[in-house]
Image (tube, rainbow, N blue to C red):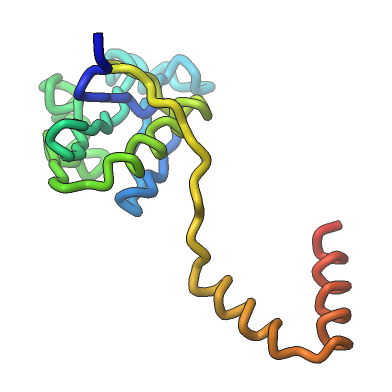
Length: 162
């Protein structure tokens, strides 16, 4: 039997937000007030954990999506709308880079920031990271230094790393 076509994970970073690189965006993770000190009032108010946003990818369609599960609980939805900006119930992203999404989701799972709720976790392959503009600029500036200036710069960097 082949792998499922859809992978969905709930973001569960123990009460913190999660940065999702393919969208260059921060998403809300699950918040369980049982894990928060002195949060009895919030626990009673919310009636349970606030579910984290769901990130997924449909491999066959080449479509990524984000779901806001709070919309499924009317009491939580009303409270959430007072406390923070609630994301749409479903946001879709057609023609995504599926391998990039799978790598990012796989890394979230590996790091414990997400749990699979549908599908199978992907095997995560090493990612070839493109250099940032700052890194390219620094490399160009370094290349133009004299040997003595390079030695001085290397010594300063080594001192900063200590």
